[in-house]
Amino acid sequence: MKRSPLAALTAILAAALFGFGLVFGSATPALAHDTLKSSSPAKNAEVKSLDEVKLEFSAKVRMPFVIVRGEADAQHQSGKPEVDGAVVTQAVKGPLPDGKYTIAYRVVSSDGHPIEGEIPFRVKGAETPSPSPSAVEESAASASPAASSAAPATSAPAPAAATGAATEQAAAEQGATFPVWLIIVIGALVGIGIGFLLSGRKKQP
Image (cartoon, rainbow, N blue to C red; front, top):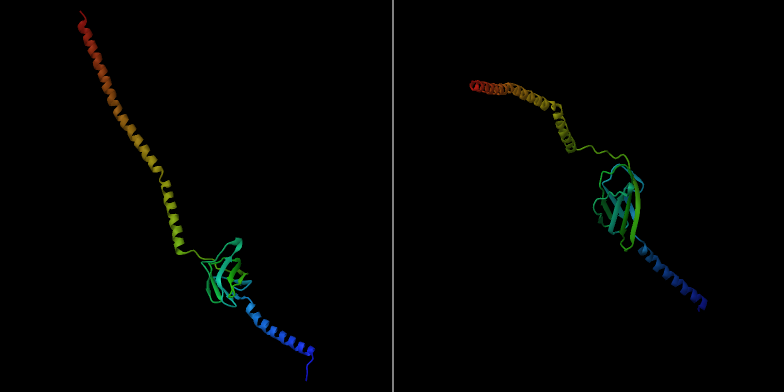
């Protein structure tokens, strides 16, 4: 039984299309890029506290870069991220106060393609840290010098009273010594006057 040329050409085209389908069908998964599977905290999640961020990808990644950005572009990540196969862990400086935050990440996938994105989340109901015992002791120590410096102000009149007493004593001493000098001077003048009188009488005929 002979085949017509048209039937033979149709069979060849069908075989070619089937072969192309197998080739491209098997190549498509290899060309697919890695993606982010999950994150902790998840997108738009609300947490009370946060010590670290975890990102899990669909395959192994390398060269991770992660920042935890708060309001006014303040960054709260601590140190460099660690990668363990498809999981990237980034430590966070805590405790984080209430507010909105964003996890910005960038990694290189297993096929060399960069993957990047952002994950918003919110901290609400964070506990306010109580003052440590050392801080209480420091505040008490700082208050003690102020109290001791205020104490001498109440005893300030004492030096003034002592000065007044010393002045009165000096005046009393001056009052006690003044008549002695006066008597000496008067005695000297009297002696001189008597000498002049005696010398005047001796010169009279």
